[in-house]
Length: 91
Image (cartoon, rainbow, N blue to C red; front, side):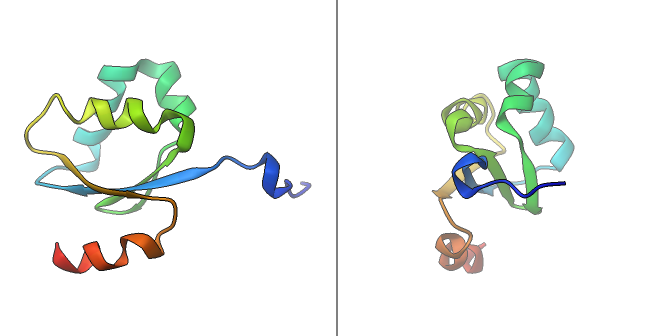
């Protein structure tokens, strides 16, 4: 398989989540709000139990899905994992 050029790759943003939740609950919230097509466009990848990688074009839709609940909040959004480093220690 041929490697993609950097300009062709999906640009990701990393979301640091706060609260008591499971991965299944978060995925269900996003799926309920933006649907199956939006869920696939978002290209979600779990980096750790509290960090979620999302396609940059779908970031606002994913963030909006967390507004509907009280147990999950967005702590910080960053373009790199290194940018979340200081906030991870506080959790």
